[in-house]
Image 1 (spheres, rainbow, N blue to C red):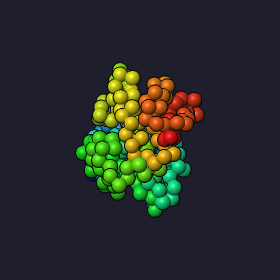
Image 2: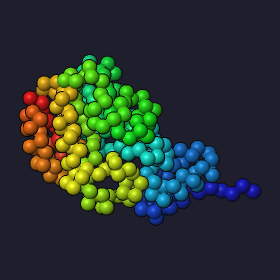
Image 3: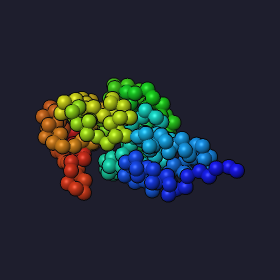
Image 4: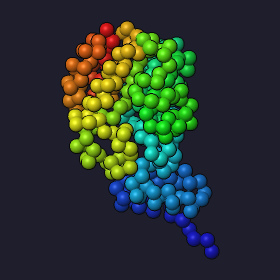
Length: 258
């Protein structure tokens, strides 16, 4: 007689015991990813119990309602970033041009492309594995550091530059959730001593590629808006405003060139 595999309730209990914060929802995703194969399901559950990010285990996630392939080793897009992507969509003209720096799996570029199909949406990514993942998601991605490999015809013509660069202060990485701290690539997380090392370079890079009055959108936190004030002014950015979440925490910064 064939043994019965675990049901959703049993899987959810195992995931809860492993410290997953949404075990019932994750159990549903694992069951769906495994199909009817009990052996596959057990393997997926074990991977998640070991702390692998759920998106790596299932092979995908959703971002602003769009499915996004996420391969093991690639930074997992966060739902907290959706507000930044929504603002980028608002700012991008229907026939405009935008760049998503440090695109990872390409989630923001995917959302921009769906919302503005006639616009030119390009992306960059330093990690070759993430570049391949972005290509799987249909993103026009250029493998290189920040804006260095963008098509030259876009210099000074971009309406929007959005960047979710590494911005976690080095000493704070130890306090991240287990799946991020122990599994996701440090390249995608570590922003240096105060978290602004790559943010500062992104500011300088964006100033060369945006059109006058174009907009830079950065994801950041803590007091990094204050730490970036001088870099923004030096790069020629004028008006800026911060974006906060429902709890009042800093989540993003919007700055206009010129």
